[in-house]
Length: 398
Image (cartoon, rainbow, N blue to C red; front, side):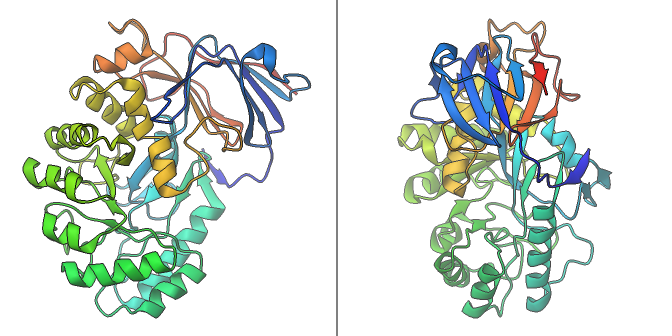
């Protein structure tokens, strides 16, 4: 259900009887707590039920010993307008992705817009319009951070200043436009950074007409804030070059669902070996030629955990707290003052896994029983995941 961004407040919400609380913090991924208290969309307490002020709640939710995790963040999407994508001519893809546990999406450029303007006035106008539109309209309640212009030759520092002053905080993938040389990209990335605009660079072979190969040397020279789809989108650089990027760059390592899975595992393992797992963030890179992936983030978590031998609780951090910290978001972590964006999960029915984390490490995806954004319940049992063994229940709703 697509809707206008809600101005209503959640009031006081008590979530109790949590069986597993994933924090999103890669340094402390599992919290010893069974209760979260929310007030007007923000977390106000995390702890044991007996120690929390749980009185006079507008809404009480019994997690029935299931898992609560920060809402998943898709660090790499290509929206257009509303809940429609021309890439596969599909309606409702954002709401459908919310049923996969995603509560926040970050645009890497509105590149699929039919007739997308490539002149400087037009690309700035599109970015500002997209930013405003998704700020006002949240499909399924999902927070879509959009308005990510694809940089083109001829842009000057003043253009980036004007974009920032207008509220644009992102650049679309560097390399999808006419700027492809490392020295050109480096200058524009620096201008963007000067005015608080975060940049992402396309990595690997071409994806859409007009894009081209962006190799490791260009990525290193451009020095964008995020090494976008380091495992290719779709075509990857060599495993050796990807590992070299992990080692020589200090920027975010973005792994995507729509890229090379073998290289995805290599990149994540390289980050762990280099003792910088906090740099790993996850995206889908959809909608794309391979379609829309409502369960893409969950599938990627399962892939990295099962085939990459990465503990599931750490893999969940890649899609939550890591992204929140790198993207400077107020969600993605279970701690006081953060947005009350949660996904309630349990192991899928009849999985071979003993519990949720074990099932993910075996390669299964969990069942989503409820999604909450800003303290408001946005969905019950997911229509897209396999059914969860146990689901969350709303006990009281004034």
